[in-house]
Amino acid sequence: MTMSALSIENLSKCYDGKPAVNDISFTIEPGEIFGLLGPNGAGKSTTINMIGGVTRIDTGRITVFGHDNRRDYRTTRRMVGVMHQEIVIDNFFTIDQALKFHAGYYGFPDDPTWRAMLIERLGLGDHLHKVMIKLSGGMKRRFMIAKALIHKPQLLILDEPTAGVDVELRLTLWDFVREINRQGTTILLTTHYLEEAEQMCGRVAIMNHGDIIALEETAALLQRLGTQRVIARLTTPLAQLPEALLPYQAVLSMEGTQIDLVLSPEQTSGELLRTLCQLGLELADLETRRANLEEVFLQITQQADTATGRRAS
Image (cartoon, rainbow, N blue to C red; front, side):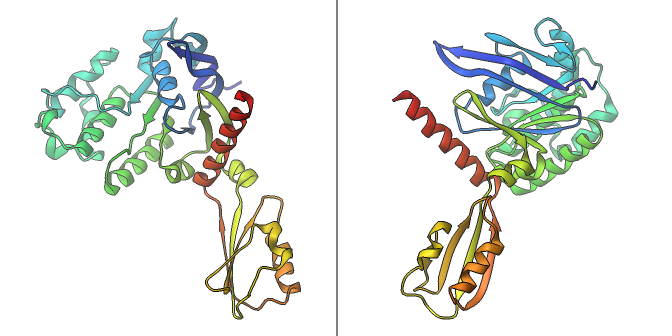
């Protein structure tokens, strides 16, 4: 039986009597890139802080490669690298100085070869001898990624790593993350850029108000809940929509020359095309587009909010 890289069992945390994380459970397998998604205040950062040992657990259990993160905290701290959402730096050290001694916090000696690789891959070479306070926001984030990796963790946690950074750094970061993942590092990622999660993560968990409201393979989630949008452009304008198109949430636009339709997972484009032909509509063009993770995310969280409101009432 394969040991999980991360196992979270019935984890809860309250602040001033209000639940921030509410009895959640999930596992991440070795070698995964796993996405933990949710709106602001969903409980993602609190969960990450409990995994990293920064925040105390109220109830529940966290194990990292089989080691309890409270009982075996020295071992699990060495196994986990965390890049926090907030920029946390030592303002008066240079990049070079900070990276040289940071691995020692975890009981690891400095590895000049590994450190040089991180500096080169993250584009820090021209800034090594600058103090942190003089770095740009993007450069500080590059340093924080290097700092999270300097002790060669088996599990890397990236909490909003590309928030507020330029396109070049995003591309550089994701290429590097894929590379270290191929070499065996397990990744837990949170991001508000859901197109990144869709491209990077094999599985995602969606949190809302401290609860896990979805946990599934990314492709399966999109297939199960994702709608398909269809744009039909007509050669002859319509004065009004035929009733047969109402089940497709049809909207008439462009002075009657365009129909926007939505296919649910249960409806097929073939059925829609047959309906359009039976109606005698002359098509100039037909465009289809699958729903992305952002649209599915909004659908799930809105449904959860509605259900919570009904329970509360």
